[in-house]
Image (tube, rainbow, N blue to C red; front, side, top):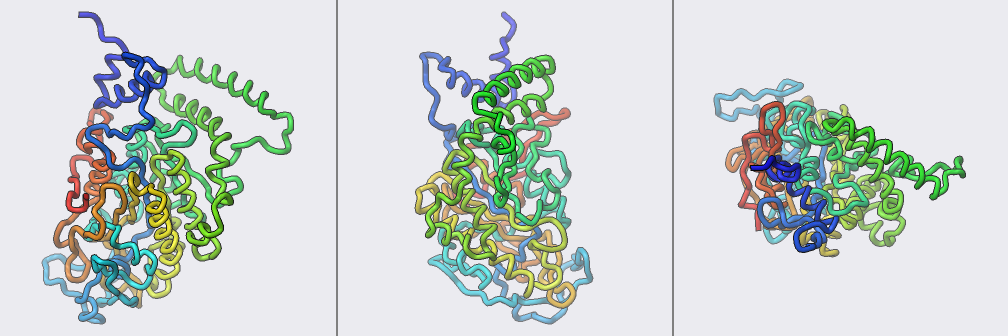
Length: 476
C-alpha cells in the first residue's frame, strides 16, 4: 500500500473539515473530477441540510433583567416588598450585595401578538414582533460573574482561550464571499465589552477565524483601508506592485514555518484587506440607504442612532456575504450597559430604548427583503437578574435563569420553551444552558455539534464541550 498523500491526510483528519476545505479549493480551481464547478454558496451544511446560511446575534452586555422585560411573574406583584423565601434548602444570596425584599417590575406588562407573549413597556417595538420569535425562558449560566459568564455565552467555557461561536462557524463552514470577512463584530461605540476582544477570539483555531472588529461610528469604520491623502505617491499601480512583492515575501517566510498559523492568518488578512479596499467602502456606506430606511432604524434619534447604525450595517454585511455578524449593546464596566445594580427604574429604560427600535427594524427589514428565509437572528445576554432588590431599586446578578430569543430561518415563531420559578429566580422547567443554544444554532446551520471538534492538547474540543441538546421545541 502506498503512503497516503497530503490530500488523503486532509480528508481523513479534522472530522472531515480538512477535506471540506480542500474540496472547496479544488472546486474553485476547477480540479474536481469531471470538471465540476463549485456551488454558489456553502449552504449544504457539514452534516445535514442547513436551514440557515448566516447569523446575526444581538448581545446585551451586562445581564438583562428578565423580570422587567419578558418574564412576567404575578408572584412578584403579590409579594412585592416582602422578604424572599423560596421555600427551598438553597439560601438566596446576592453577588455584590445583601438580598433585599422582593420587587415587582416597575414597568407595565401586556400581552402581545397572536401568541400572547408578555412584554413590558420598555420594549414597545419588539413587542410587535413576538409572533416571529421563539423564546428560551429558562436559560441558565454556571457563573454570576460578568467575565466568565460572557466567555460562557460566547465560547461555551468560563475560562479564556477557547474559540467563540463565530470562529467555529467560520472554521466549519468557510466563507460565503472572498471580498469581506466571514465573521464581523460591531461593538458598542462606548467601548468593548467585558473580556475585551477575547469574546470574539479564535482560541486554538487558526487566527484567521477570529472576528473582524469594525468601528461603525468611525471615519472610516476600517482604519487604513485606503491610502492617506498625504501620500499621493501611493497609486493603484504602485499599491498593486507592493502587495505582489509583499505576498511573495510573506509566502516564502510562511513556507519555512508550516506549523505557525499566525503567519497564515496574517497573510490572509493582508489579502482580504486588499479585496476589502474595493468592496468594503460600498458595503459600509449607510448614506446609500433611503431616508425612510435610516429613520426606521432610528438613525435620526440620538438615543437609537448608534445601535441603529450597527443594525443597519449588519443587514448590509449579511446581504453581501458575511456569514456571522455580532452586534453588541453595552460596554464593559459599571455603567453604559445592562448591569443595572443601582436603579432598574432609571437605568433600564435608556439602554432598552437604545436597542428596541433598531432590533425590531432589523427583524422587520430582514423579513421584508426575504433574508429571513435563510438568516437567523439571536438576542441574548450573559445572565439574568435577581427577583429581590439590591439597595433601593436595583437588581443583582443572577445565573439561575435568563431569557433569550431566536427568529428567522428554521425557527417556529410565537413559541416559548422552558419556564422559570414563580419569582424568576431559578429555572424550573425546560432548563437550558449556552450549550443548548449553541447546539440549536449549529443544527440550523447544518452542523451536528457533537461532530464539529478539534484535537487540542490531547482533547477533542468542541463549542458545546461535552454538553448540549438541540432545542427541537423552537424549530419549525
